[in-house]
Image (tube, rainbow, N blue to C red):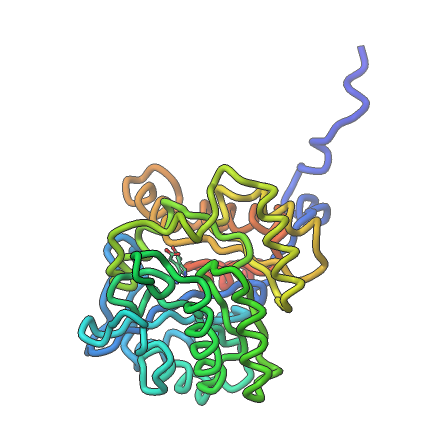
Length: 329
Ligand code: PBG
């Protein structure tokens, strides 16, 4: 009796062999760190559902951003948390030049120049008193086209403050075209758009709502996608590319790896995936109980997201993953 002719285990026999034949390789430059900066706080404010993640002060943001760049991450995605009293129906603090997000972009661009890719969340939910991603009409519904006007202004303010990339995350129809038009009209034709192309109405955003002190009471199902749908993301992709998206994103990541693969197969544009707050929180909580090894789980999940087809991965663990990748070389 001879053994099996095909012996896949030959290629798994030691670390050097596994490294030689690995199909997916990650580089720290593919990782993007989402960061929160809050107005009116003197010390960083821990986010209880995301151990190790904080709402930054301006000073701690600058230090953490420099550290992330030092770790080799490829970009930073900034979210602003205004004071409660500055929120209103239109989210006007979002495009105010002295609003927290725009001040933070200005500071980071001054500190970091072009050494990293500075990205901004282009959305209203952090800034509105009702917590929705758009403005509300007389019937209490999110008004798509009125919201586009607000996104145009937000994107221009963020580009002016120093963002290399704006990231419209509100899932309004036509948001990429509106923002591209506004940026070009104001002389920001070099500012790129990372489109949240396939963004699902997900339970995994739970901890983010704490992270940005969201005022939302309802849900986002009239604008974010139904988790039941797959082909819809292909249509969203065509629309975003047609409207001028430079990069496209799928979000969340871990429960939507099929969508990441679909999108990657359908476009040559860079594909990003966002490992969201709830994904981070799940791994943290299980690790706290001693049920999984946090670092190993995060590394495996990020690798899996890349294997599914994402070339850019947003994760709250970006600097740690980047440092482990660099140490392995
Ligand atoms: C909207 C936005 C959200 C996230 C990123 N951008 C919240 C939402 O859509 O409800 C979630 C990110 C995360 O959960 O980590 N501005």
